Amino acid sequence: MRIDPPAPAWPGQPAPPPPTRRRRWLLVALLGWGALLLVLTLVSVYRDEPTVREQRTIEQAGPVLHRALGELVAAAGPDVAVEITGRPVRDECELTVVRDGASLDASVVVHAPDADVPALLDRIADRLPAAYRARVRHSADGSVHALRADAGEFVAIEGGRVGPGTVELTVGTGCRPVSGEPDDRAVLPLPSADPDPLRVLGALGAVEPTPVEPVSAPCPGQGTTWTAHATGRGVPAGPPAAALPRPSGAVVVADTTARYAYRSGPVSVVVESGDGRIRVAVSSGCPR
Image (cartoon, rainbow, N blue to C red; front, top):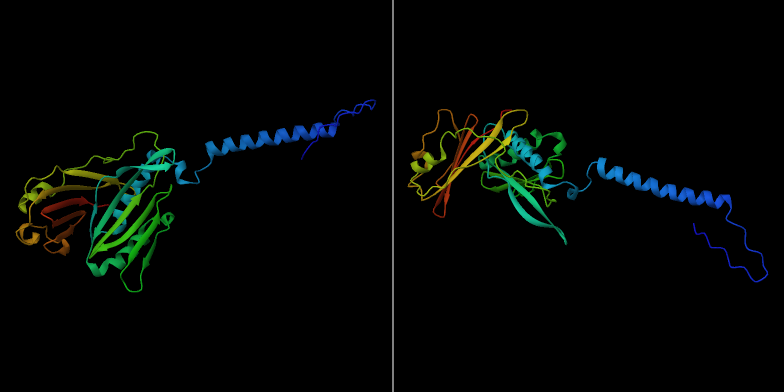
């Protein structure tokens, strides 16, 4: 409401009366309303839940990402080979034109017979927490099988079939503000991998092996899921199944020169070769 200043008096004309009590109360009410809005804004900033991703830092999103990795491993079930492909990778990103941020991404890869991939994605979606609102899309021609879910705190899960018998599901934080150093290492201590990835590489004739790289995530409820990776230079002389003994009762889900994978109880072993390199991943899954 506009309050016009009193018009100047003409010579000989009496001065206008002072503001009325009603106008004074109106001014007080406007000032009070502004103060109330300021208080409500401060309360909202410090107490309300975030409504956009940029209100959560990368440090706050890290534990949500690790928890989602464990949920995915558990949801995959006991009859597939599963691995966490690597520790979450921190990438620098541009939050705004004047502010830099960071993002974290990590993936769970599931190996299964190719014909089982559509049912596998449906099973994972059904077993994830209801709050994730997981949904699966199967194209009419069968060429696309994809899953999307929301792990909370604006952490997304998305992925699907990336090759014959292979499903990759990536958990990503998106670009976030940085207030410190996010925990992008293995979050829990790991036991010795059995079988040892370096022994597997040696049995396959690989040379110049890299150090074992471990990564872990908390399982739903209790326990830890982990993967130990190692890579060497070389080409398998024949099918890996011939060079690698496996426990009695192990379920073989892939058996070719390029990819060999089996599951024995909680333990998954995956061997992949190509471009003169041999990669081994030994993992322990989550109990259901």
